[in-house]
Image (cartoon, rainbow, N blue to C red):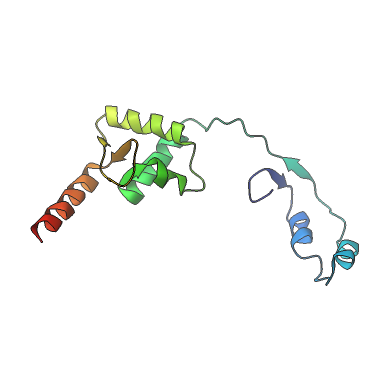
Length: 132
């Protein structure tokens, strides 16, 4: 639950006790040997809304990393905001003329967005492949 971001603790002793209960070999011995948890656990609440600017900053990071961004690529990022939030930011960036929208990678459906530099590289690769 900690790794999924559902709970947190005020210290590491709680987590250490769960991960390594003094190397006890079986379940009963392990349960008996777990030291008392000296910290507090807290449930994290998710509002579903990302902080302002987070989606655009993440979209910029994806664009600088991959050059072309589409839904399937964004799903591979574990910390990515929901695609709908990224899509709003990407469309805004396209409207400002910072990036281009279109269909650049044939194997994937849906909206795709790319940096102008990435498009130049994709065109060069396509021309080179056609010339070969």
